[in-house]
Image (cartoon, rainbow, N blue to C red; front, side):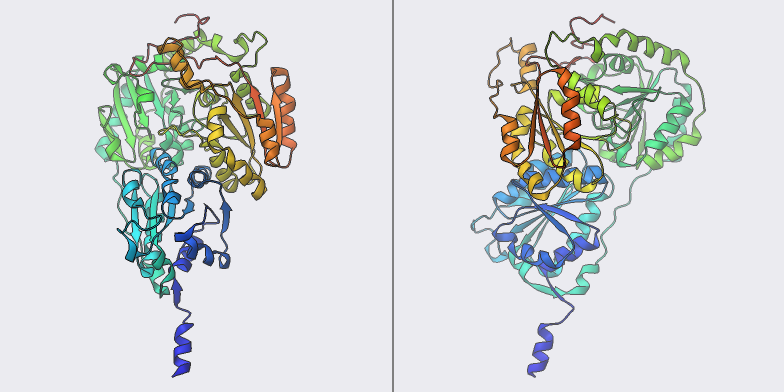
Length: 573
């Protein structure tokens, strides 16, 4: 009898909930997780050493979510973040919302107080599923060990299927400590079939495309998410239609291609916005007509018919009414649309756009007046030139983000990682750390402002502890630059709460055990970049740029795309 009891205790088919977590992660192909331990997640951490998954200890849970996000964007796979209950879980919220707005597949696993304590306001208890309901594709509260594995498998499936996004799984401490039989791990996830563009819709779209004289493709993030860059290029070349990109769509169509126009919208190229307003047909591929793209909706492309190909049907006709809806995965839609359209030339339209582009050529970086000052566009242009445009660039949010989009020309998919929809300051450094684990052989540059950098600069020590290399370019203008720009244009130059005192970033890097450099003149850029590229560890470069430089052009909020604020010395179109 005692032998029977002993055998039952070591039943190989039994696993704790904590063990199930790691077994599922391993089966899902997860090789790295980003997290921070605490009381309610301790059983999971205790089980970790037995499994082949690397753990990266962050310095703040927001960093864990951004790292998981950066990993997902750089790899196309699901990123994973771990945190404890209460403040550990709430610190993930900004990163989860960032991933939600930009359709990034991450799974966040949080510990929760024991199920018997739920609702009692126990120490570090928080309703994280309630808090994250609006910013996740789905979330779960798990209170039984037997449910851990099937729920986690389902979470991964939901995160990466359809329009990707974040999923949160909150697991009570007793569910981590309790046991269940191994077969619970194999429960199949539920599947939700995607909508597909009908043959009739494809024919209607093809007819509009064939008849258009001034068509324009608006390429968004969906081009990258659906891995449709090659198909988009074939489609554009066959139809002779030029391609404008959203911020998150940059890299989906090669910047050097003759049909590439660059970025549209609030800080897009002036000639691109003009072309958009003159077009007679817009083909929106994997984009959602964000307000930063459209400007004032009532005056947006009023003379153009519109075709919208989008994986999320809820985005179609949400902001802009369209003539033909093509729901479904963009790759599948393009595969149907490509043979249905006629091959043709649109030389008059391309020549018209080229003339507009020529009129804007004075915005070229070589034409900017220096006056002995280091300008941010010079930094970004020279970084592009010195890296031959081959680096993976991860940007923060603000003026430097827009200058990067304008002056660093992206040729490859997934060569730019940035926070688009939520505009999250502090995103760049942790996201780049996550990207490093996804792309160990790539050259990675972090482009960040002095404001956003200070929000998550603690993760420099994560770089040092993990022995990883990213190069950090701080565009340091001593202000919260984009807010200051708005104050200059719209608030009578009343710079309230935007002048920014910063630590000595070179000394800060050294305090973290890293290399720090400072650049104050354009002639110093090349040597600093070369030094950063040869250093074995993370390098921080403090670029002291002109303080009151402005991102041009700029479309004021809710204004017509034609109503751009232009650089003073530019010729009017």
